[in-house]
Image (cartoon, rainbow, N blue to C red; front, side, top):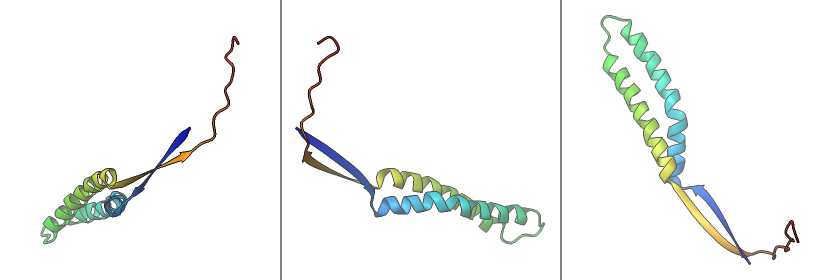
Length: 92
């Protein structure tokens, strides 16, 4: 009897996706705090930069989620296994 063992690992795209998926919300939160700070000032020169960085960090989060899903490598190994002992049924 044969047994199939499958493992999955993240390739370079998957690791980049995991990094983006974890780090971009933190960066997005910091940029959002900066945007709120800029909105409180009447003559703010960095308003569009802060809003753009909030948008880009949200986009990076979504791209990271997709990269984690598609950035996987699968390996399979077929190994012989010991034969299972036959058990008698309930009514045998």
